[in-house]
Length: 195
Ligand code: AMP
Ligand code: ZN
Image (cartoon, rainbow, N blue to C red; front, side):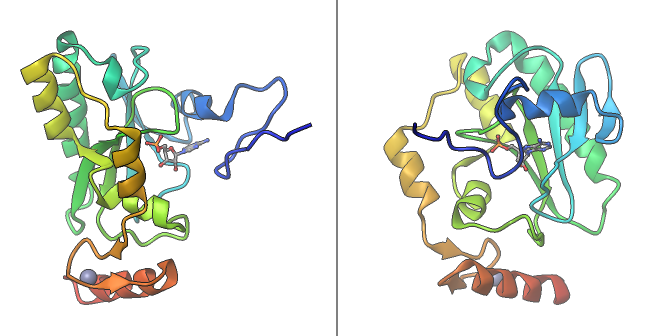
């Protein structure tokens, strides 16, 4: 019998919930929670792709940006404000906030990530391109699209695949790298030189 693919970032088969529901458990885990109020829970990413990597999730059962409606605009503003609050703790780092065009995990989650991208969990070209190409949809742009159109348009599969396989490029300069070890070495040069 054909084996099901399992997520390399944790999870198992059997009676336990599907791995893609993992963030829902994290929302209830005091060790992962960094902030909570009536509307959201903010957690540390379990496999951080940078020095600081948080996820902000609404308590309302919204699965992805494609399920957002105009009535969620205040919630998005709130999530953006929480992101701004979180990064105040790290004035020595630059950050960006955004949603993945094709998330792997269930429940809407806003990534709040520092731009060093210095992490042992950042391993693959797909990881890199999911944070540094248009696969990463900036929070403000998603919000603006929702305000303008009343919904967020899906990226086509073709566009997504093309972006995922974009050649490796530094997000801070014109450097191109042949492989991830080379890119990671280059990224460390930005950290030490405080680019
Ligand atoms: P996305 O690709 O937007 O769905 O991102 C999901 C994020 O959740 C990634 O940054 C993962 O590192 C993180 N993640 C995946 N599984 C878990 C887990 N079980 N606990 C905590 N974080 C997780
Ligand atoms: Zn560079």
